[in-house]
Length: 241
Image 1 (cartoon, rainbow, N blue to C red):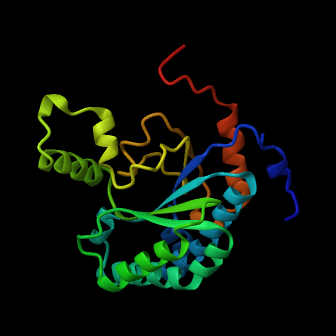
Image 2 (cartoon, rainbow, N blue to C red):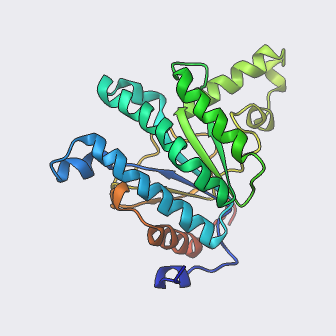
Image 3 (tube, rainbow, N blue to C red):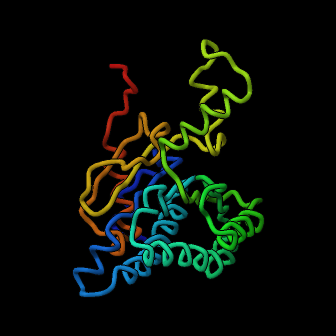
């Protein structure tokens, strides 16, 4: 791949191990072009794989993307149906390509609540196919909500019989959807919105956040590099001086 100016600006010794992304703006991108909202979601597929390629190029180990939230069920039924089918079909189309690139596919979210069996099968097939890859973990938050994750973790702790005064942060972290997932160092949200929208509420406690005006379908690997450069300019103190 030909190096861009944005890529050459990245310090290879200070690349975040884990980047999280809220892929926002698909609907607005389509509306601005007098297209159905579903066309925006389709265009967002290329942006997702631009982000994957950007992460691969600089050595990011984890990329977690917000694909479908627990709140997305409130959208019009036709759009919900499209999103479910689109995510299922995307896995069919792209899992071999991702496997060839050494990408491990994982999912976080509620699998036992509302997700159609056909979608679950595609998720499980993608995880099995790529389970031994370690170049990059593409972690897809699907039927995911940050508050729901914390509730589910606390419920599991209660079910295990742990007394309230024995509950620790480490114990809650151990009962999250994927305890092996490190906290993101960097979170990117597109479309000009400046909020986290119930995404990784536990894990984002000390994450650097970048809010971009770019709509997700226009997002490229150069935007990944630019966000990393901005991350590298920041002084991460974690509450210290």
